[in-house]
Length: 91
Image (cartoon, rainbow, N blue to C red; front, side, top):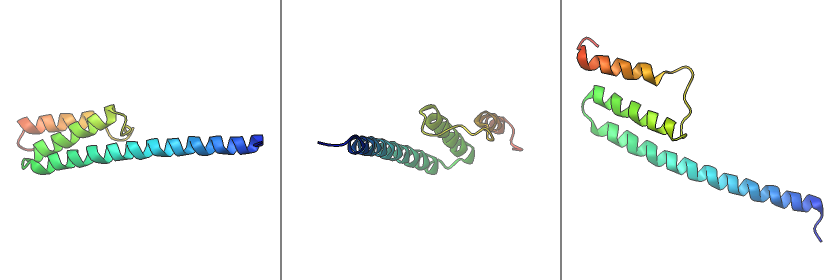
């Protein structure tokens, strides 16, 4: 008969294994999305459009929960800057 500490140890080991598998799947999914995004950006010759592709991709990763928004960096400000650059050649 197993003692309660052995049962607890097995339960914790099982939970840990499941969580590590989930994290591995999430990382794999993120790496695939990141590679796809970087490939799309590398294919674009126009620098402004390249940045737009990267911003859109980061925004998508953020909305999917793959990347947390930074309190120090505003994607909205970057998007406004890129929109302004489309109309103002001095940027």
